[in-house]
Each structure stands twice: as C-alpha cells, then as structure tokens.
Amino acid sequence: MKNLSIFLCVVSFCMISHVYGSIRISNELKFKKKLSVTCYSKDNRMKTEIIEPGARYERRFNTNVWGTTRFMCTLRQGPNYRHTRSFTAFKQVSPSDRGGLWDWRARENGIYLKVWGGKHMQGEVHMHKVFDWVY
Image (cartoon, rainbow, N blue to C red; front, side, top):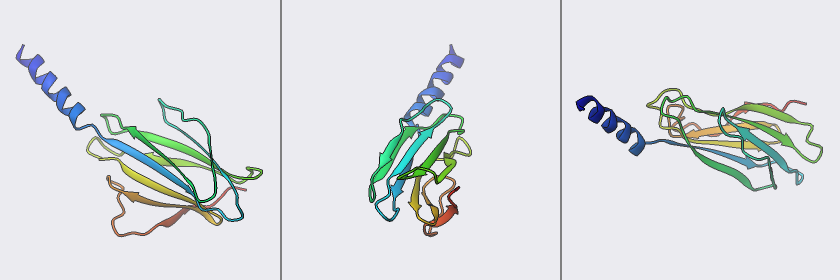
C-alpha cells in the first residue's frame, strides 16, 4: 500500500507540473504570398492552414512526460506552393525541458527562428536564419 501511495503522489506531481510547448509561424513573405502550414507529431496531425501575409499560425500543445515531444512542419510558399521546407519545428530534449515557444518566421530569403524558454532558449540571441527554401 505504501508503494502505491508513493506512485500516486509521483503521478499527481507529474500531472500538476505538466509542460506545454508552442509553435508560432508568421508569414512575412512579400508580394502578398500566402503560406501553407502543415504540422504533425507522432500522435497528432494538425490540419493544413493557409496563412495570409502578415498573419501567423500558433498552436499550443501538451508535451509528454518523457521529454521526447517533437513536431514537424512543412511550409509552402504561394501562389503555386512550389517553394517548400520541412523541418523539426519543436523538440524537447529531456523530461526537465520546459518546452517553450518556438517562433518561426517565413521570409523571402529563408526561414528564421527564435526560441523563448526551454532548454533550447537562445537568451539574447535575435531572430536568425535557420533554413533556406527548397526550390
């Protein structure tokens, strides 16, 4: 009975201190180009969204207890959606990783990132280019 009580206390603590992650993808493309965004994880598939110029896509989600949550995203530039890029848009590295917000910006010359919070937090680092578009 004592072991069961300890187990329940640990599980309760994990539930109370549950961690959230967030992905934000902003369309900063020029020439009024729309941006198609599709994101998924091992357990979740989010529907494809078309983001208008100047708008953003943002999703908040629960991370898992083991600290292995990953979300992949595919971005496509309109109007013909030929320029694409698939990448890991969010990842946890350990159970103690607090997740945080992964702030992505789609621009003409590539895709930029700044992480707010979590083990990947970049502190005072400004938005920086991470990927080029695939043509």
